Amino acid sequence: MIPDFMLPLLDGSSVRSLHDFMKGKKGAVVVFWSAVCTHCRRYDNYFNSFSGLHPELGLAAIASRYGETADEMRGAVSQRRLLFPILLDECGETARKWHSQQTPRCYLLAADGRLVYRGAIDNFKFPADAEYAAYLEPAIAAYLAGQSIVRPETASFGCAIETTYYRLPRQL
Image (cartoon, rainbow, N blue to C red; front, side):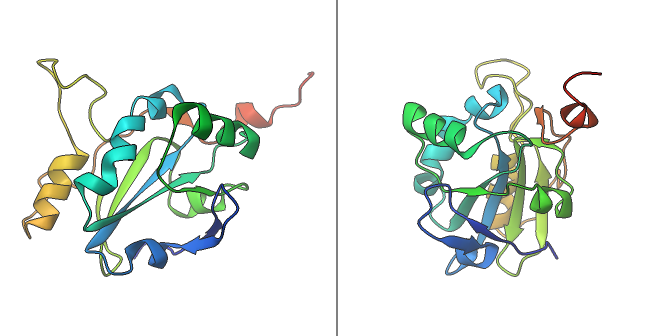
């Protein structure tokens, strides 16, 4: 079972749990996200349209990246017109509990809280590229169809949530 969380929404409107995003749904996708990560930026349209593509699934983005401020995130939300819910994990505790080390990293959860897929959205190629491989969408399709997920885990890539480098003193 994946650990639950209670985190505030970036807009300050409420505190939400994993259960809140799964209530009345067949499951949920949780993505560790960053406003400054260029890899995450590439998926803005995908996450903005996620609820329309998959109304049977909840979606939550968790912002855990060390040193990233809520003001930076709110600026990105406004500038990029982001519509998906973003939760603040300011101390990175949820990222550590979920063993997430970079953004974006996705988790597809069954309605009972079981982890059914973990990893990248795709291989970071464009869909028109001959080498393009989607990972999250085939996992969602298989899960919703009651089939086995062929690749239940893929390697993630992107921006580090926290590294030793981020905690080095400014001046050595």
